[in-house]
Image 1 (cartoon, helix red, strand yellow):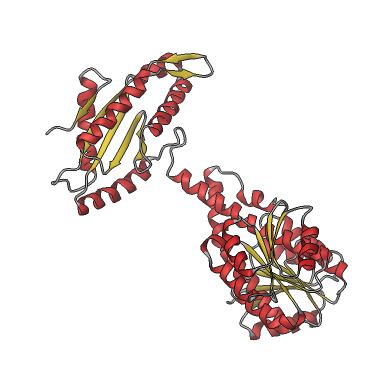
Image 2 (cartoon, one colour):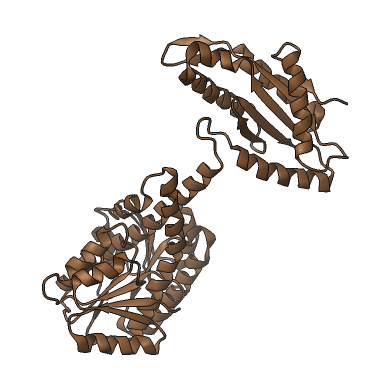
Length: 457
């Protein structure tokens, strides 16, 4: 997988060395010699991953990393700190700043390339979500990137798959202050437990007794219900080849034994942040999709949704020779409600009307605001008699209980007229059904209102 790699180092020979190595692996490379230039490149979206030196004059690498991760526009960028510093405290400082990994000079080429490819692959998975989430800002859903970047990475559910009891208990003790932790020593039971437990992060010992830890990682990664769970491998020095393989098929991170307590906590926090970031973006995308097909006042589906789904239901019913019916409902004398009580009261009546319709329709029915005070209900697998029965029930439920105006503490008596039509053999387009239902509604209005009329024979 090709990607644009930003190398940040104040020493030109270091930049050229990394640039040569990465170019041979078909990566595109851009460079910055200081922190401010690096931040500018990141904000302009000119890179996919950052390889960041720590020891730079002015703004050091830790501060650059912190600013990248705290900026909603750049928080999604993977950052690998590359430095000669090799103390656990330095590693922890980098992870606390938000770094996704920490490579020590001299750099092992295999480790570098596998980590870059892995992080770029993970970033690519969120890029489409980001672009769609950004679009949701244009329809009034706030800033989803800022909300996603604010995630603290605490309060997660963690599964530790480790057959060494003492090692598992030490990890659980380290994580238990901030997360809910489960220990499972058996890999087969872990595979059954992982989809059911709602876990955010799974730590897997590669040398677990009674199974193959790497295969377990692969199985968890491939299951639909655990595909978004963050997986961290626990490995020995002799497992480096297996670590590379794990990163290649989508494992998110790894820890080498002996496991440093602080590094464990930091890496779990990083993975939990990344997982929740993706979930927040998915939520924003889902909200924008729902808003695009939902009427903002009533919460019913809108005309766009109706047009799309009525067409599909019409085609399916005609092809399978199955019944299909439609109702058009119109609140009687709705203009008088607005004129007498005000438009806010009218809106409240519409919302309450929509709530009653939801109570008396099925999950498979399409209930959509057609315009103004009109609502269309499409009834799959319902013939004309069924639709008439449903329409009468709705008409009765609307009439029998007045609508409460909460702010004014008073009620309004409301009735509804309904036109009913069903699919006929000579119908050629979905609009044919709605046209007959609309004519039936017209007759209901002109026959005294508060009644149900069927399509003409």
